[in-house]
Length: 220
Ligand code: ZN
Image (cartoon, rainbow, N blue to C red; front, top):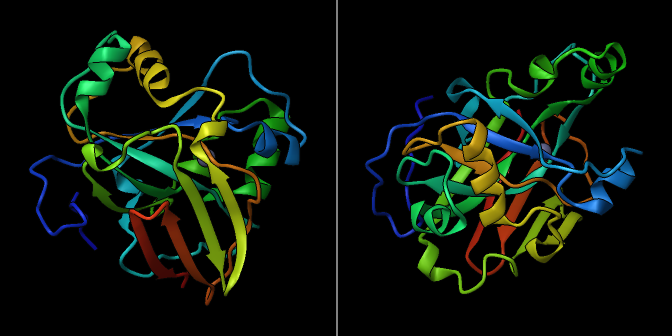
């Protein structure tokens, strides 16, 4: 299914779909739940454009590859190119704020980590990044005080707040741009709060970004 960035108010976004830059272990409570140490600097990885699907449609849970975990994250849509950007430049480049699921093949990731291999197969597979619509940044008074919530089959599984990020949004974007140029249409996923767990075909997921976004999707 083709994906196109869009805003919640129905207005379209004339930005191509690019890469998704993610940060691992950006909430201390999530690092702790997986028995991972807190990194001393942002731990980055990338999902390609081919990983993205629209959260408004059901998403596919890969079969036969071990457990698939949900990670609910605040997403940032980049509107203009950023190379070695300052925090001020990063702020000006934010075109939208939304939600993403950083779907993870957790068993496979564990095996790859054990061997010291890259995580790509566990994180960047086709369909591994369902994205919601975006709201315009001026709708959100404080990026570092936004609730992020996931309810699975009626049960709250993740409920965090962006105030608990170890790397806040603007320094994170600035840091990313020291290594990877962010292009218009790229998306940054800002890490998951605690509560990650397996998702199975048939599960009904409701994701919420404060009072700004609430939508329901289904795992297939
Ligand atoms: Zn994640």
